[in-house]
Image 1 (tube, helix red, strand yellow):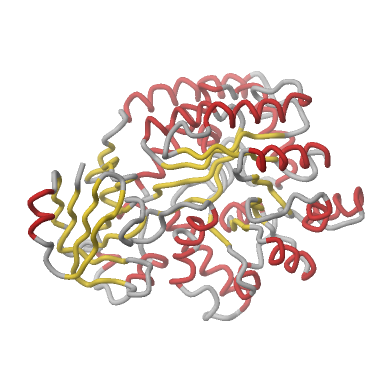
Image 2 (cartoon, rainbow, N blue to C red; image 1 turned 120 degrees about the horizontal axis):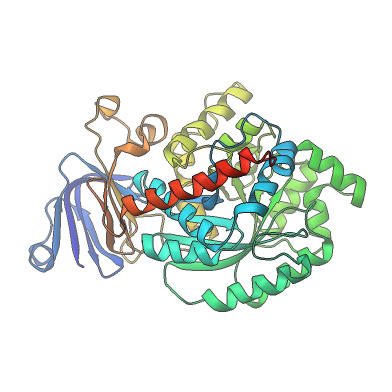
Length: 441
């Protein structure tokens, strides 16, 4: 569908910043025209869909750079616990008992519904049974980097850990090139749950398929001490010694970094994903983002999974990311709004080699439209400030992904929310039954 949006404020995230009153024309899956003032007559005539967005704000869709989407079905199940206890006594046992492809499908459908309603047009996911996540994203119409989980323990879909790399390979073979919305990848859980051999094999696999390797790194001080005890190196230095760090390796959290590790990250071109709300809730630490950005290290924002956040609103994540570092450093000038906004748009787009994250002719048509006439957004002096410090996910009205409208006036177009609700409530009853059986979940 050829779509024309006009009479709107356009936040391009290019050099021109924003256009007070402009128009944007989408043909097939790309932006083919963006300009000031009234739309050219030829676009008015050829558009199959015309959206008059008077006093509304049009911007690139947000990119959630780290998620475990299917864990929306475990949201609120085990809160206010330290990470090791949360994982080993609650989450891992729950996953072993409950997670299968259908669980992942419906959990991702629920998470995707939430993400679309809050303006996320692309997310990076790491979990088990990711075939279900692929199916869900195709049904949702959302762009995604979906990484099959690898861990050296019995896991959902891979009861024998010796088969973890083989299963990841099958996932890549099955889904690479299946859809222009989907990039299949590999997610190795952490350096303390995957052996050196597993990590190296996973990296070789992603090299062979020219895709991304994701890994949780230096999330807690406990992890740092454990890796130092076992390998005599800090986590990033240990991964570097294995030869798995490069621009297609994405490290998640990176809360406890030394100066030596920051240098390694810069030298190898590794991408970093900051998850401030999850880190705060689990009290696991906080990534030194201002220090990384000062070294021109790409840092993107992610929510982490909805069982440890507990929402997927990237606008809220931006607000937290901006404020927490100002408070810690006692410096209101660090993490300016425009820089934080890029951590949820242009930076992850570059990290994942996506032609998105900006409003520019030739880029993919992943855009969102917000209504800034709400009392908490009026008047509007600086759109960067509003988007980071004042906007809520609920202010998003319309979402367009790959040139297709998937949310219009907050109504999902491509899926039935009542069906999602029914299946989620059915799975929730299974979770409750496990709790009644005194299973540690």
